[in-house]
Length: 179
Image (cartoon, rainbow, N blue to C red; front, side, top):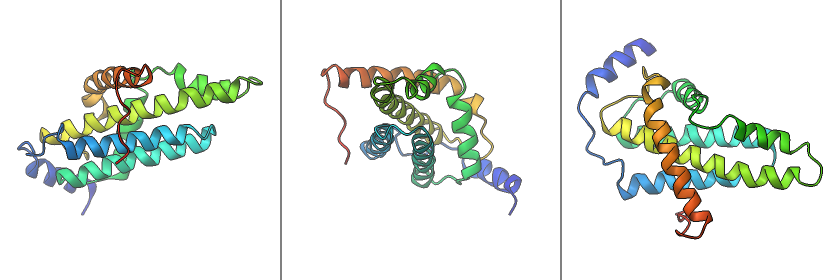
C-alpha cells in the first residue's frame, strides 16, 4: 500500500472525532512522562546526544498517541511535522543556540547548557504531545498533515507549557510525576 493510498484511507476513516479526551488522565500522564524523559536527556550536556535523544522521545510520543487514537503512524511524517513545528518560531531559535554556544564558554558553559536544555526539551515535548493529542481527538491524522496546520496550536501550547514549567521552577506547583 502506498503512502498516498494510506492518506486517502485514513482521511475516510478519521473524519469523526475520536472519543478519547486529549486532557484525560491517561493521555496527560503519557505526555508528562515523555516530557520528563526529554528533560532528563538535556541534563547530559552533550548536544548531539541531546538532539538525538529528544528527537527519539518526541517521535515515540507521537507514535504512542497514534496508537491510542487509532491513527496510522509514519516516522517520516512525524519527524517532518515535529521539525516544522520546532522551526516555526514558536520556540525561540536562540534557546538551542545558547545551549550549543554555551558549551564553548569556559567554566560557565556546561552548567548553562545543562540548565537550559532540560527546560527547552520538556516544554517542547509537552507542547507537541498536547498538540498531537488534540489534533487526533478532533479527527485529524498524522499522514497528510502539514506543520503549518498545527503551528497556531503549537504556539499556544508552548506558552502554556512554559508557564507550567515556570510555576514548577518557582515552587508554585509540584513537578509532574514520572509515572
